[in-house]
Image (cartoon, rainbow, N blue to C red; front, side, top):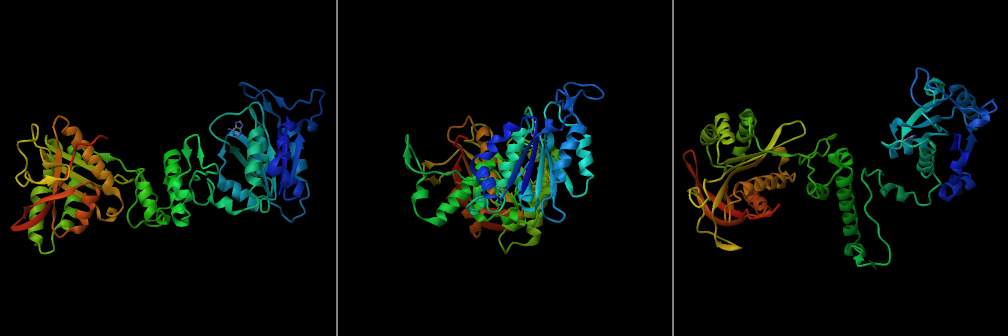
Length: 465
Ligand code: ADE
């Protein structure tokens, strides 16, 4: 791989003689030629710039000087037939430089010619001229959303980022896989070395456990955590189908979800819960509620009874009422297309909650942290659309619901929320247990003509968020 770098400050690039890149040059895996652009000037002052045509601030670098300089680099014999040459022009107006581009350049390029501009940049005809030249690709690139005084720092960055990927330059190519922006698409997990204790800070114990499987999982969780925090754009670009069950748990903690069975091309996304205030949303809620309610009914229940229940309690009109009436707390979650995928519906009794608790409420039950529970909020509905069951989204919906209920019952002394779930629905019971509920009693629940035995579960709302 040959690099030709043109600059009016060639000594700026002396650091390329150091470190790994310097060694790679000495070893012959790369060849770096630095040129002084002023060598192609013909006037006494060695002028490389002129005022902008059409007016404007600053000076622009002249196309004729650049043309003469760059031609010499592109005329160089690289010893291969039809070599792939790239003219890289650093500019804050360029395409963002990424690891993916660096990998491509390192793997498939024979020569990178870097034109370091200064002042207001290089006459735009230079880029368009070389774009038309056969065998040359032009790549105007930016290091980031900030402005440097010239392209030299960006040239150093490009050479170092590409050179280390050229086969033979780095001793252990495996280290390239795990690093930030590597093939995993994540930022790298934190690294530690001896001493194991330093200024009261110790190395995470798991790293000295010798359990390679757990260490690998910890490192991946840390990479996911760091990436979710610092680079949500990278999480959003992950292929959901490539993420496993443990990744799901780790990313769920940071608010990222995807359906249980992710299709190819689907990415994680960060849903936010909504509290609908406009009755226009009632249609969406009614549709989801009608679709999901039958899934929670016991096997023997008749379709007519289920439909009668839906018509009475889950119609558009019913949801218009839930949205507009005091006392009902409706929370929803939508997917990235705005489609409603989960909802909860709770009934908060008026006053301090002591009176008006629903008939089925287990007022005499005991919870682990206290004898009698109450006042009571009823969690009447808590449903996820089918593709989202097992996605972890229940945690998000429950957190949002409890937050809303906690603020609705702030003046209560010891608020609790309870729900009834069919005795046979052990999946739901396991979920509610995970979400902090405990069984406190039972109740009868009438759907149409049929009486159902429900387990009643409850949890405190007395939590701080
Ligand atoms: N020249 C000036 N600013 C630059 C940037 N942000 N990236 C690349 N080249 C530049």
